[in-house]
Image (cartoon, rainbow, N blue to C red; front, side):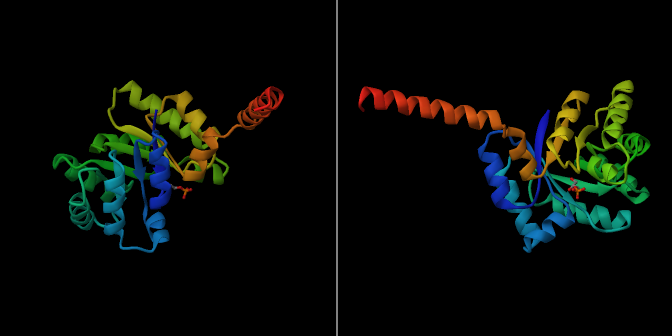
Length: 218
Ligand code: G3P
């Protein structure tokens, strides 16, 4: 399973990239707004740090506007993947971009049937938002299982990016289901690695080592 980071923050991206575990980046207008910089400049810098796909979202409402924005965003770098909302206009945009060889990530996907349609329109990636479904008392990971089943049934090539991840259990369940990718906030990536027994184990080894050295007098 590939691991993307869901942020537009350069420090977080550099730190995650230095761990050797990072396969790509997803951004959205909220995440870019948090950085308070010109989005194109920020995206260019992100693409210079990470070799894998970097999702950049269109904000137009109609497909003509979306396609125009997508073409500008695609000029930033080869890494750029165009994030398109799962709407009627988004589907039209996806069809056009797919015909032009521009990769897309269909975002704000909340149902298996939406996922089926975006795949038919030519989406490279689909992003089911699990956390936001959990927030409204609906099992977010059931959506991922359904999308995976449907895509497997029809040998659909669209890759599933599990998004709106809130905690490590989402990542574990995504891996069990066999999702292609998860995109995590930086703090979740750190939580994936942390284990109290690892920390306790290191402390114990170091203290025993020190005792040995003291015994040997050096
Ligand atoms: O990748 C989608 C993600 O940014 C949405 O996450 O936490 O705002 O639901 P959240």
